[in-house]
Amino acid sequence: MCVFPEQQQQQLRFSSKLRVDRHSVMDHTHESAVLRKLFVVGILVNVWMMRGLSAAESFTTGLPKKPCNESRLQWEVEVCGEGFKRDMAHIDPQHRCNLTHFISEYHLFTLCTETKASHVHCYWPNPLVEVYIIHIHKHFFSNCSMDHVEWVDPPENTLTALILVPVFLTMAMIALVVWCSKRSDNMA
Image (cartoon, rainbow, N blue to C red; front, top):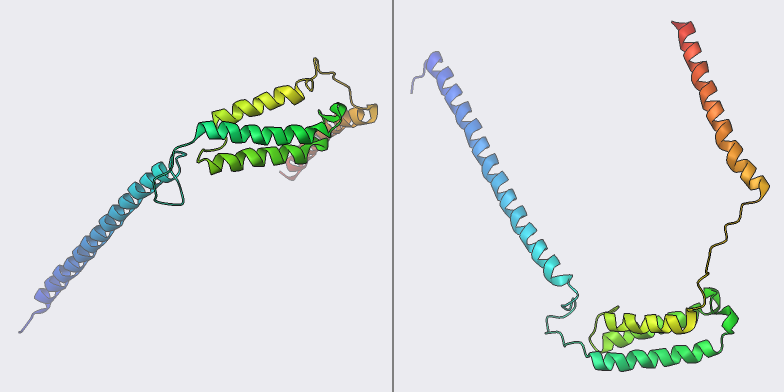
């Protein structure tokens, strides 16, 4: 085939246009495929979050979850409470408002209620357990709240430092700004 230079240039322009069009079509199909995949992944993640993270369904097995046995939970929580009452009987009533004296007993009580709730297929904390914990708090810790808060000033050395440090920093910043502005005026 005999091609003249003019025809050759036109064919080159046409073929380069064709290549550009092919690339843009390929880019467009690639982008739409990626967008479709992202959309599907978004839907799947949404479904997973709605199903898997709800408290009503089990996360570990696909088996149907047994219903919460609230009457047994009530009994089990009371068993935990009796153990906590026995442990608290060894604590001097004067020290009941200081958490450091009974933190291990309280931790064991909380762990017991959580474990028992799990055994009877109930989530924790749940309203039944919360009511019992509030009952325990009222029984053991009702006298721990102070009637009024006594505000005490800090020592004079601390108070002086808390007042003077910001004052001196403010004065130093002002002096620095003035010095920098005078210096830039002298340079100009």
